[in-house]
Image 1 (cartoon, rainbow, N blue to C red):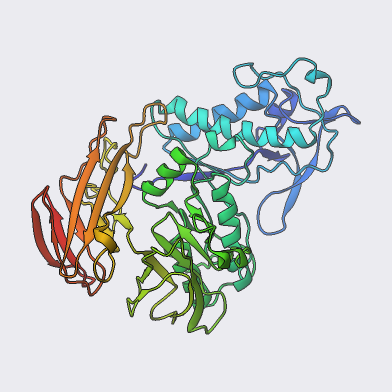
Image 2 (tube, rainbow, N blue to C red):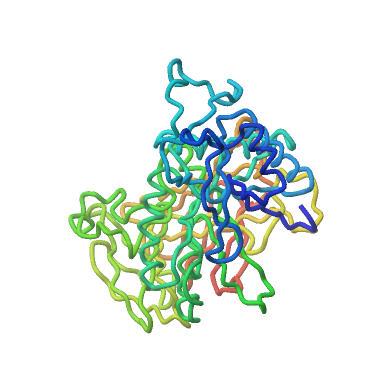
Length: 488
């Protein structure tokens, strides 16, 4: 890490023949073998700019030579300060399934079942195996340099077991178009259902023309509500002063919950609302989705749109509906289609809060993770915690208490040493006040760096917050005009 900026290296599991290490790896048996020529297999590979290709070969991660070469290379990158690895182009889309693997890597890496050495052809299983070994090698090398840390490996491809070693993925080289942005929703829902907790897309598109201002803004508005926000393309102009952005930003509450309960971070709009017959008409999954269980997110997928139709799923007759988190901030009943304002330079995209739920929020700037030992960028501490609640417009039915739990950890420890604590806000609304309760479970050993909690009411809600369990201080209005109360 240099002046507080973490660097990520794009690494690909192949070498072109002009690479200074190509001959060494070839002679050591670290590349796939062509059974016809009995020589290392050769393929045309992407080598430089758009459409530029050169002869080269794919690394055989079942070979001791290939695996160790990659592992040592990643270690060297980590030793010079590269914090994260971007395992790109690792689908192993080779032209011949008969190419052969060495299958002689150390048994600690891969234990080859008896008899399989007689079937060394890559085939379908071999491509999947190599994707996983490619990511495992990066993961293990990062841990070798920084034991006890939480390795960050981004992978373009994955198999059922790859996400043990990679924490993030994305949809690849998408096209700049309105249809591409719309289609990204279904991909994200599929990925979440497959328990890829940190998944996203190249905002604005990777391939194709430059996006016009409206398309880019709509994509940014939409992409913010995915677990991984990234702007990355090959067509960045020379006047770019910002650079590419690859930054998983989502509050860990959603991803931690997914790891523990297998609930996707992004969910089909009918998730938990299967008894509502209308949700079964929304099977394409491309226009709206749940982000966790507290917010419904929708996109705008055509130029010039100022209104969109949006469905609000209904769980039961006791469902208390939704709150529009954009102007005009109205309450909306469940089980109906509504027209929402979505001016691209005004209200933005549809974002609704589920009445009775809450969303934990932190500072609106980068902060120092509790587990970080150094602060070379002089970042602010992660010592502020808020929670936005979405109470009923009037009184909670029958005095009902609504409850939301979120999770936190130190942000740096490896999974084997990680300690996760939980925090719960509960509230019950009356006409003139809202009763709140706050509890925490830090029995894991992790203690949050914040000592008080700020309860944030919806825009325009001026009710008083009270508690029988803790001191409540009226903080007035936030910069966004929302009423705030501190629990301490």
